[in-house]
Image (cartoon, rainbow, N blue to C red):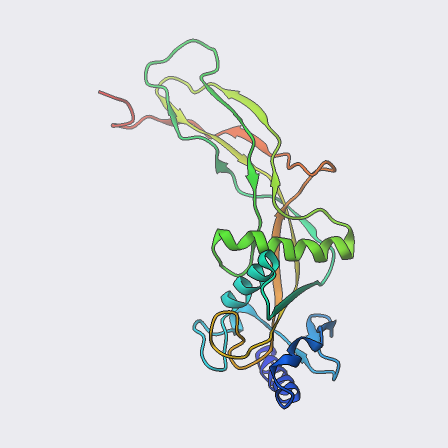
Length: 252
């Protein structure tokens, strides 16, 4: 059965089952992980679909994947009444290697030369955040990270989430007539699972389920920095490849 059809059938069955008793019974049941990638109710109904199966805009009986993620993040941070969320990982988090290099400083233009002493230095403590496979704003990541972290630590006693990077000092020399900047990268880890949400109210307002109590996103992937045993991220710092100065890089 196509995952999207499986979700639609499931939430319809769930709504029929609870609808006659009213919305107050929406939290009477916490879905369980089942069938390798879905969540199930006690009556055996499985539901869930990948994020790209959800519509781009919401309606009376449809919801966007972005709203599910945002609402779960808000519930995790603020304990929103009438909303419950959970995340079931498919397997233990896996290290995915170093990410791409990102600038730490602006370009330094060596217009006039100088001695052989280092002329570009950096000493800083970075904040490392998390991300996920559904595009949402940076402010959402904190709450969502805490939701995933709770599941990871319960299942695997694994470090997860945002972290402060180790304070480092790094110096480099930029040759005369060139410009360059300091850059860094760090190891990442990711975990894939199913993210589910249970709405007490099924209306179309804020924190409501657009016609259904239960929704779930399968194959939901969250990414976090790899931490040492002390919980600190050890990043790599390097000088970018020096580029020749162009007109306008130096003051007249």
